[in-house]
Image 1 (tube, rainbow, N blue to C red):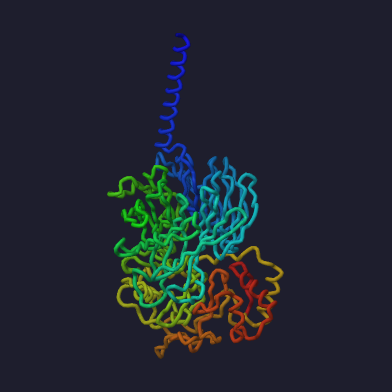
Image 2: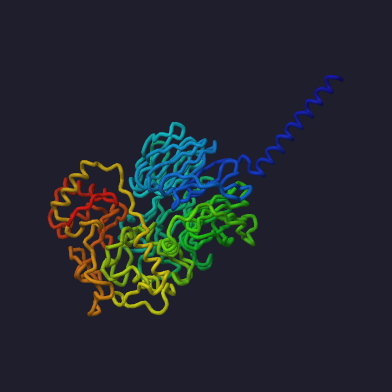
Length: 633
């Protein structure tokens, strides 16, 4: 009897213990105390493992901020390096911050800070599943840096393709890297809708492989900024570029969500989603980031120029449905959601705040609160211009919100696309350090930045920032017609940083290449502080008395004119060489795929260079940034 009673008591204790454990585990899951972490991805905003803290970068304030998810209040920002761009939180709560302008990784741990040098222009950071390793894309050096967070050391560098950008780590340890700009599609040419392809690099142990995203029916994937992994599938948010005429707001520059399978190592083309398709959605701009809920039946796409989050129902992957939009702050760049999938947190870059979203109610789609996370560091006019540069959802700038300046000028740089224009084939030009380099455009058709009002009204189909009709290009000045137009011009002239040159170049070759540059007389056209002789021979508004279309004194004919050019018979405006490693392909029509191809044009160079001299000169040209000592013409 006693034995039977003891057995019964033991069974009851075991049952009660299991029940208690089950209740405890259920409570922990429902309250998201210890969420599972099956994959990580790069983002400017992240959630701690206990979900009590959201961390966000403040790029213009050189800091990061913690937001308390219980009180929905922000702590005092913590200073880090210059231009923090991406971050992660380890399992023990340390913050790992990528500083883009410094080329460093800052680790904040127990009130201490460690700094690890990475290289030039890192783009994003993602952590391994155990939180012990950081994987960082170093875009200027075509590498992924692997950092041991325990020893705070850079363990190795992995060479990948050109301009690696977003990065994510799958549950099996596979590292997935997007490449920001598309490459030439095999057998195709520039300035065509199927001329380029996007691609991802996969790092598995010591091996690197690739998966391409072939062109869609009307354009190719470009601007691969967002990655998310769920159940072996990689979701990629990106632009679609259609450079051929005619222009159509739905397809010229639009957005899409592609899916790549890590199991089959190929894109799942039957899951392609054109998010700008009129039957699916209203026009939206720049899908810069994406995440999914734990179940993988919801995707949330960050629309940088639309100031909104798009919700997509993926319960039927082959027939996705639009849930709708959550309005957020200015220029959102990233989103993170809790394990329950009920709350989202959005990093709004230019309104300096975090939006808290109610994701549970897909009918009302409410923004619960907006929390200020950083002080303003820019002058009001500069901030105003920066907001306008990145904004698409303003009818003055864009028809139905389909395009912004930043859509083609990533971070003020280039999208690597050659467009068919009324002047001929034209490669997107970089905008950094423009002040003092007028006239603008490859054919020197603009004598002031305010003349880009013509692009706003014509190319972007906006109403325009200035009242009335824009004056003729090279005609009367457009400056001082609108505070907003002047603010936009001010940002373009003064607010865009020249990217840092790669740090892994052979400095001996750089020195030799500098001498080759001088010996060949390149400084005659590409000398001085701006690395271009481009200049205005008079005041804006006085340079085309005969209704000329070009500033003739700025043109140089170097044998690059083609039958496609309407303007160009007398040559082209000389571009700056600063940041040259970031602006491939080259020449006005993108016909030089790399710098060596550029230097084989003897009419352009003025002489035939040996292979050794070309190699040294290419190395020197890649080294040019804002810190390079100018060569006097």
